[in-house]
Length: 368
Image (cartoon, rainbow, N blue to C red; front, top):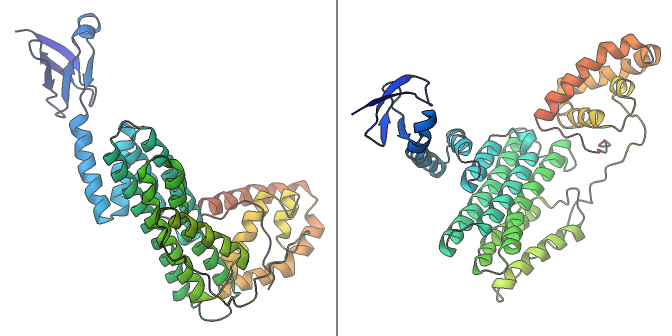
């Protein structure tokens, strides 16, 4: 029996392995090490068998998934993803649980991330070597968890605005407009996965799995619109199109299904948001970035409308800012030192706001 000196690839310790055995264990960290005979004779290299560790991580992650422990599930699925970057389950549920830890302001972007992750997972499953039964089981699981996320994101947004009394007064308040948009995203997350399943598996019986999330989406859409009697940023025709598409998908697999109908009476009148073609605020930012309509200023304007304006101290700040900033910009806005003084500060503020979910896409100010 001969002993071979090797270095543990896990902890880096120098250890001795029995040359007559196919594997051994590190005395320091316990890692199982398999000797690669062919390579060892020339280079003395080893490889680590991580299968047991990955199986243990899957048991932990799946248990946390069932308990809906968002933080722990995201952590352990993330650890699996590092070891198995092509595993659909690790990819989907890492994104899924990380997205569900979002703030209220990030609900829309969280819904988008989950939707994209689900679509990728469905395509991956369809192209995999899994049996038909295994594929169907995986698709059912994705449909279930995406539907759960859509309902959860909506309820979180609703509860937040109820606690701030924004669902009790003016139907056109900023809180309500913000809530309507987040509810729309949550609803479309559920209907979106239904359409994705139907499209991805259109040649298989698995496509029928799309019916259940489609029914949930139709029911929730009617419930939300019927309860609040609003149109959000969409017209009645837009919502009728959405519902007709959902109903058509369900009838495709259940011909006797009775289609859901939109509320007969839509009230109040559609929300009107006036576009600003020239600067109506954000004077300092407009002077620094050179335009009222640019990504940085769009982010700042969203923060003003959907955060600052929702508190009395924020509204006081806006009032004072609008009272003083035009004069300051008129005097100093063209100077280099003014630009140098504010550019770095504004860049950091914009980056922080974007990380919190305030988007930098084209935006129309709300006219109050």
